[in-house]
Image (tube, rainbow, N blue to C red; front, side, top):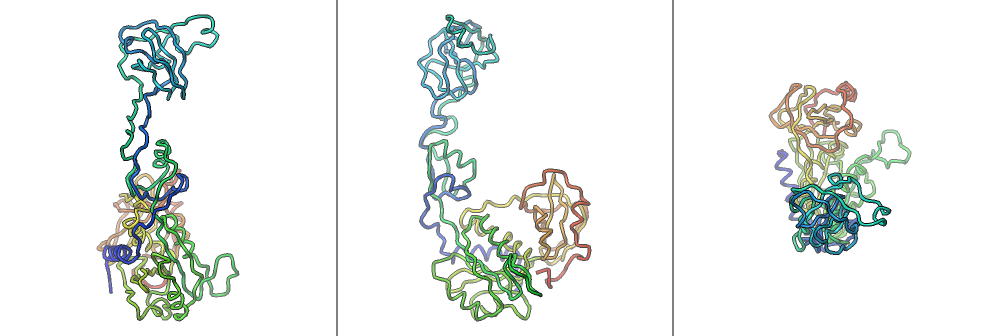
Length: 439
């Protein structure tokens, strides 16, 4: 059956929601460094206020409320370093205070050192010789350069709600609040397997007619980056009986999803299709290029997804279907940024399909990298976005706008269009079928 991209995305999200058994489970207690990239299992209330006390925003002089009016010469009191508890400030005095130091009782403002006369602190020798004074300007506003206690967050307020994805800024906030460990949602577990008599493990000798397995590494990295826990099955050949045995041997409750690549298209040796012929798994054709052949369903109650065997098709399938479903279910990963950009060159697309091209985006422009074929891993590695050509669009001219999903950082230096286009496979025209190399 033929599905739209939206229909299959909804089907994958529903499969994981209703059949994966993932409900958040028992949370894990982790120290802050180990919680990077995880999602909070519960609300975190601030155990202290930030700042916990009124403190100085500048190096300067703490000034008493009675001395904020006319310019005045004030007696210099004892200096207040950060980390100390100062005595109350008396009227007619000004205390040298460092950035972040606690404001003394009676102080109402801080005058930066560069606005004082002299514009530098008195030395220890000056102070030892006798009382010293400082002249400060008048018209100082109450609260000038004072950080009030709780101005960032008050004690007891929610610092981070449940489900928050913990990045450096969030972990820094928790550390500032004195939180040393947090409860996070458990990882979503995926069993990953790859099929094909022709595939070999990287690092082993390559026999004639064989290729190295890129899909397992590609998808494991994508899944781990998306916050999942991945177990890799050994490579499986094209024997349906062996594959059925592998499926039957999966312990109940050991995984939330079984994900395979290859063996689901229209060829004569589609091992996954043969092994699951009598199961509830649906084998669909999605109006997507690359990534048209898809499979989804359950095996012994465990959700199953089958992606095409070509590496680019497998990754596009992950980005289009599985990554959004993981976000909806677990809160991880964060959604990809979706941008609007100007095409550097023209493109053609099968009008009946949603085409996904690899591109290099910078400063509002996107250059296509490689052709539409699904075996072009070098082009995939050189790209930082997926360019979307929707159903109903057969061609776009240079200068027209396209929607893209940003998958990597923008290049640091401006790119020359000719440098990008050198990656194009001159022999690859715009494909219009899901034949070999385009699935």
